[in-house]
Image (cartoon, rainbow, N blue to C red; front, side, top):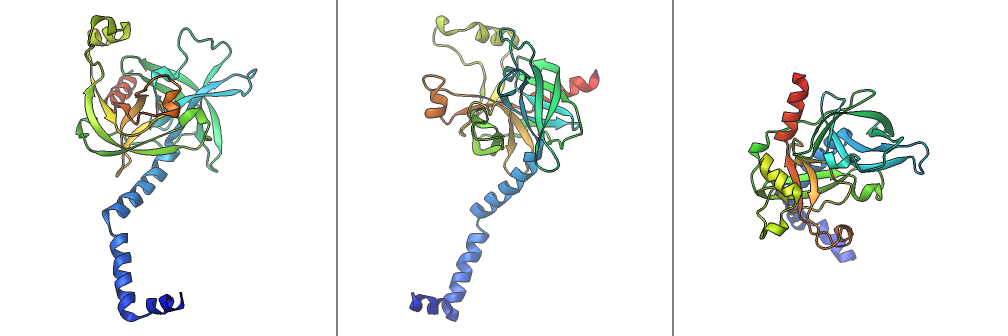
Length: 268
């Protein structure tokens, strides 16, 4: 060990080691990860926890999914399926979001639905209180297969804590959301309705999403601009296997449908 320590101080060895360290520091791998760290720090303040509050429940707050601030500082985006449906018993429950306060604490804000786009599984919300930094929406037509992206949310229903979790991914395919069924028996009512209303392309990702990630942003790994919203994961077997044996295949709705939702609201 003494011999090795002395060799480090020898001029020739030292210059070689400096060159190696410099090469690693300037390598594409290092720079990509350094940039992603900066992007994550920029995206996190815009994240929303979406759920319901009921004073008689224990716990009083129930997390339903993720969301993010898209425009205006008080407008949030999440998935339509994150909200309670007509068959759910939500008597006495208030729709709320949680946002990060100036000291990093979570603040509960009341929220209302401005518009619900069930075809594209989107909801535009307005929440009370001070403005929150908004993320930039990119034209999703610029997204290409093979592009490096990342997704952020609150996986497994907040079981890992209310801290945004980031997963890296790649756009592995841009594919229609309505896939042809092998037989007529495999066509569901929802599939038939989607075909009638008009199918559209979604992003298939090679990243892992979990329950709770729904409604979280899919963003460019270099710029942090939102290119989509996570809305479902491919499940092998039962729903429980999505956690125990994740498929590693997730899907996201392109951001242009979010843009359309926002533009319609501005026109009203």
